[in-house]
Length: 267
Image (cartoon, rainbow, N blue to C red):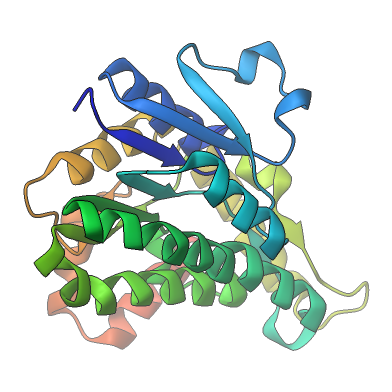
């Protein structure tokens, strides 16, 4: 794989940083995106990774990024925003921003890089999603919807591109210990009728994130998906993924819904 070029979005922290590190270690040429490469601290830089500017809210920035990186064999769409709030109280502009960053920005970048992959007869596109897309949770509706949309694009377009040697796949991590909870945007009114349950879910998420898997485990699964001859539609890791996906397949949907609620402290 030493001749392959990989582009990893959101490569300055968390999963993106570990994916960039893992690929660089394995001999790939790695391009990592961040909104402002000049502002990166040394602790967020990885030897052998070239940093490129990308703001997924800005379509011209996405176009400029695609021009800068040129021919790319592997795209890992990892950058995104985490959001939380009762559906009734989520601001429309916040949801619009979330979908532009988590979904439309990733899709635009993918569209710009796909022609080169198709013409060269090789490509891998990995959407870094969330197990919440398979196991939705109260007060995470906007985030869940964005991750479901991202997985939907990848899953539906697989057959379009696989005849050209280009494979789209989704990696769904469970709860991860990356400190993402500290960066999550939150929306709830001071006198919200949802305050009690919202607080319970927030506490449960904090507990689970503190005990979550390390981002390097997710990175290892991303590398596995990239290097598979024919990547599967979905890979999952964390939160006892094999067991809970089996339960999801066999148990009634209402039972799975109750399981998720209880796991986060809701009755």
